[in-house]
Length: 417
Image (tube, rainbow, N blue to C red; front, side, top):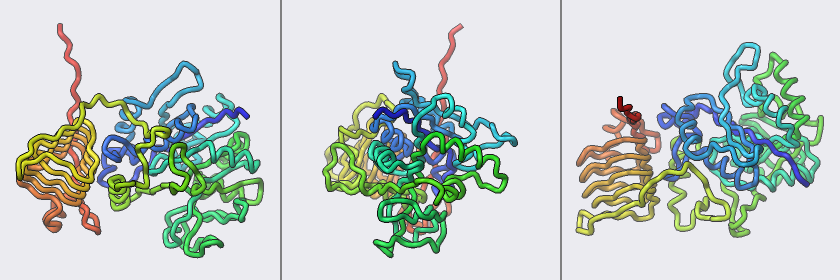
């Protein structure tokens, strides 16, 4: 059965809990895994699943995200139905406002649905770390004759206030929807966990259009899928929860558990990044049948120089991206971004270094996140004296030091006259 599927990626979130990493960028544009951005996960999932008609809805501090999309994601293929297009708020509501909620974001772009006339519309967030075969969720939607399908995953009950919680029958039919409530009901099969919405939806097109128009006309609505539209659908028509744990990625072992992380805080972001260093990481970036795609950077290979005691360029249990040079410095248990420099005698441990970071001679960095373009002076230390670090940097309760980056200069071409 051939289905026309249109995708919307909601990439306009502020990501306030990831501050200061989101001080100058939207959360989907935050680097992850050395050479990637968080938005790369949802876009790769869509493309790998054969969904090639994608609108990316942007809003807050979108310049970094737009530059990343332009560097490798925006395309218009030979076929007119192959595209990835960023879309700002269209100000189509009466008050000409920015997006007021997730449902309003789609409503402001409802003309894009009407003019493409898809059978299904998939609406996915851009701020989680995960891999997902959307074909399986769409097949489930069709098999169940569902009108709206919500991807869901069990999480600990104490986290219920952070998610929309689904009550579902053993067959997956949604019986109730509770948005970010501490008293949300647990799963009947596992009283210690709740069935949490991942914020990823498949809608039959006509239903979505009807509900968006109704919601836009409701002055009492917060214009959000989780708070308004989904609860309003319960009991009215077939709506199902798709269990993400059943999702299988081509090329992965059959017993590979589904991986999904909400990197909403600095600590969660740090832990997900450190997951990548494992000998057999839960998140497999090396599956050639399901590649994680990103912007096409023209980087030279990483380089490690010198082999003298106390001056050895080496990286152990770490990820090192293209263009990085470890010139007599050591890296352990860390994620190193593009074009990073670690000079002689320097030591970086349990840390995340974004692009263009420079670690001076004999400097030491421990349990830290260094944003783009940070330069650590020779013999300086970060992460060794948290009281001192708090004076100059952001330090989480768990002791992770976040060093803000400086804005890089933009070089423009000269004109000879």
